[in-house]
Image (cartoon, rainbow, N blue to C red; front, top):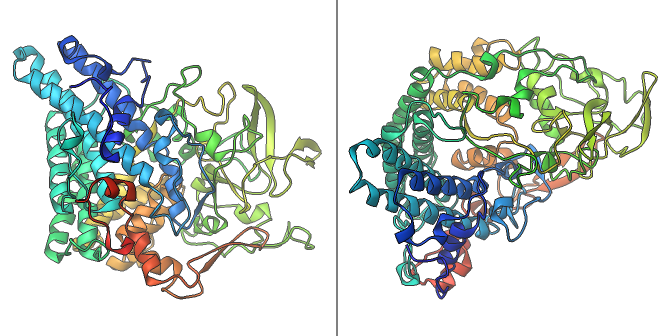
Length: 613
């Protein structure tokens, strides 16, 4: 491979690839990029190949580990911006400048497109050179080199899966780019062909990866199977529900059925053949009374470093923690100033609270009533959003995921605890007395809903806002349970094993099993599965992709040219209105992303998605 000082003359796609090669000046071991070494000084040993693979992981990690921003494309999370920086991929450049509102986002991800292709080139670099090593490798080295190759192909497949999920047809590059002329006229490949290439990568990864990795953060067979199943599930969804904005794609009902069955088969193998289990066996754990947080349910701890290495996290990206410069930014993004000066870029919307069901009935509780705190009885009225008692006996994942008025968290400044901090909406950093104890309220710096996240928020001191060492999950077993249920339901309706898996996910929230009416037919069971996906995967970047692949934007936001939908707060104020008088073209643009104009300016063979013409 040529030295990375290649002169940039052509398409921005190539710029992205080169940046992808040079973006991570340090991986988890603070290694120098292997691409700065000439081929004659590298690719000699298995250690060299492993070293380069770690660089590939470091390059791919920041393309996925802030997917909680993407949750803003759904209806239950507000992402008012990002802490991603401009000019340092290891700090989230791929997400920088994106639009994370429920509408109008499709033309704001040119940078994501660019950096995803950087990830492609980084993985191609490993794949190409390991293949070259395999041609002359000693027999004793073959298995390890094939494992490294399988991991690189899994990473490449993940990147291309993200590309087709957003842009549909995309250029497919299978080798290292050494000269601008190699990509300056590259056309978009039809999505079906790209999908087949991704499948081939996942197939190889599944064949060559170990049953269980012995190294933290490295992939194993269940990850390859899970991603292969997810790719087939998305392919089935596009063929079932259609993707008219991608004018080269023609849905096929038979293809959908075939893909649903294949997805279900892969998910079933993940579930049954590898001894995996939900975190803490899926048990709810303990829960404190409303307003207290000494005891939090197991689901909360799944999103802290205590769960690092747990089998539920089938695929996750590791972070270095304090003093490494490679920590995750979760607390900075979901917490406020009271927690190491964090910025609360991402917060739950008011409407999510009503999705948490009753532990007594297993169904939805009476809707919360937003009230102005100045109204007499607002803090004590039945079902008032400001009455802490309104949140009793709810799905344990509610207390694990969000905080409402008078819920406590541990404040932290300068790596030290400041004690309990109560959240009271719109009383930022104010003295308050609760049950005779004096506190200072949570200064969120960003919430406009009446709620903030507890999910991803650390409850211990000693780490700065950017120093977290949590292994961010990009594939969890609970998601596989729900995807399996969706796939089997699409073909055969509610099945006993799928119902049992959904009930296992519900059990971690201490909810009773689904009632018979929720599994009476395919439509009812799909609704139950969607409900669990909303709650179980909140803040993990899945909702926007679900809405698009199910073609559900109109179901959520109303038909084109309708009055739109207000998002409100717990005080009853209208906060933001989405899709008001939105045209059909605006909906179309929210189903598929714009091919970056800069790429098309440099490459006349790159066509544009129809809604963006």
